[in-house]
Image 1 (cartoon, rainbow, N blue to C red):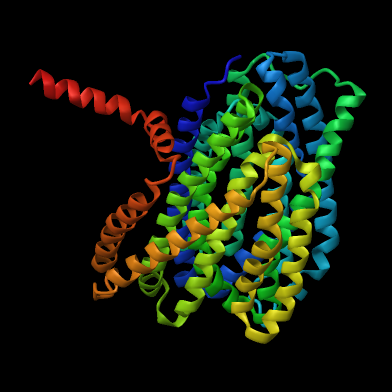
Image 2: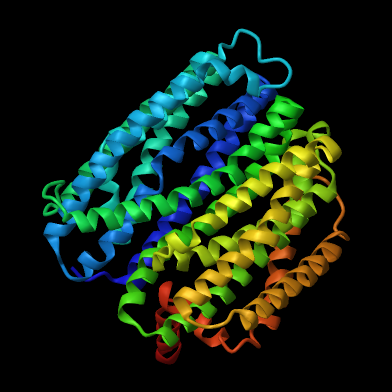
Length: 520
């Protein structure tokens, strides 16, 4: 079955963006309700449990990525038997993983109070809350999780996005009822458990109807299973390192600085993580297409596409940084009030963190599509260990600043140069010095453009919503004018523009407009 790469990528990005905006707006509303209805400490509890469960998800070992990668080649060859056998193996692994997460989660149960500095909200049993969150995680693996692999491999994650929009609407309705009418945080968490079950079941039904020939049956050769297991082992260290970077920060803040400081930090991180999530949709949507392209195109074509991708990512992330540095403080002031405001230096650190993190994620698309997990397996682990060590040192010296600074240092000094070297040496078969210089230039462009945008918008006074909207409007215009005027000198600019036009059918729209003008 042929994959329509451009069309599917467009659908995935469009519906992924719709879902992500939805998942930004509604949880934002929920955080606001939690803050004003039951208190700031509950926000901290929410973040802590999320991070602990992310650590437990290490049991997943990267099975999902390894299995989806293994499906690329059989899909190109229309090898239904192999795809069915892969689904069966996926099902077995995910049943085992769900059981492992449940067992490890229960072992950790007595130690949960030790992760909280200071007091827990009154009348709250952290053991009950933890168990409910744990079960929600376990059911994501036990209930038809393997069905989603087909949608990912065929670049139809837009289907998953549509299902999630429906089930999340139901979840948020229940949670609003729990908080406003009952003021009961237990009911709030119970809604997560219920809707996760529905999400898995509905996605499985739709996947089966779209691809009825694919069922979990048949067996792979022992050598094929061994190759998949090797990929999973390689992905484990990557997942371990990524979890340390993404989750341990939250746990360290809770253990050393308390739930209220964690809640303030997470309010900012929620916004920047929302932007990261939006950008990640692009990466997720094109990964399968990149993997398919690597099988069908030559090395030079793939490298040129990579350069085009880097240019587009620079523009996209540069614009996001401009918006963040201009708008975050006025927005936080209106949302949570002056008492829960961090200083501007933290905002700058968050912007730096966002940029270096996005560079790694962008290059990881080619690492994942090319399947070079074995060669890359120690990079995230070593980076994560350095980040954890710096966290513990810096949090005692400079508090919250040390948490973000630790991540920036570990990414810049270890993770980023390492992954660039791996991708260039193993996939593109060339040196990375020229590309590294390009990244330094792109970084300089973003620093200059964001500084100019910030200085210009500083002349707009006021603290209300109208002021924020005016600043946003000015930022959109100024940031894009400066970014495009500089990036258009790149030799990859025309290719990038052509790709955007093609994906979103802008060229077709322009042709229609021209025809109508000529007809008149």
